[in-house]
Image (cartoon, rainbow, N blue to C red; front, top):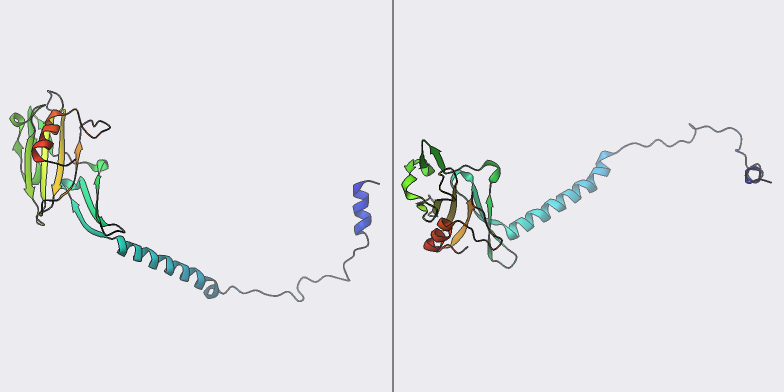
Length: 197
């Protein structure tokens, strides 16, 4: 006897009683959104409360933007109560502080247009600074990476009114793994300004 015949024999004694009506005794179920949405809403409210309390615990204490919104420095308080600064350079929409036209290099920060052609080289940087309405000092260094004016680089740093360095960055400059650069103008400028990075 094959397996198929054995199954037929085993189940041949089973039969449904009389006729089957799918409508009789069928229980209608109604959808009650309030009963099902209440636990979901409660979970969402608890998660939101947790996120808000964590944000309030750490919290952003200060946010500073550099010229052209290129540089963003955010100060936060960590779990131990220490102030931590996070610096972001927005490279997707970087606004250069210099234009090069007709053999001249023009520095264009803060509504000024300063001809810096004779003030920059591969060893010397043009230095510029201004103080914003909150008392923070914005410092700029611009120098040449090669003799061509189009191959310039720049750095910007922000120092708080109390003298604390908040953050900074450099652009159009090649950095080594240790953070130093091959740009002599930048290394000398940072040393002269006593920039800690």
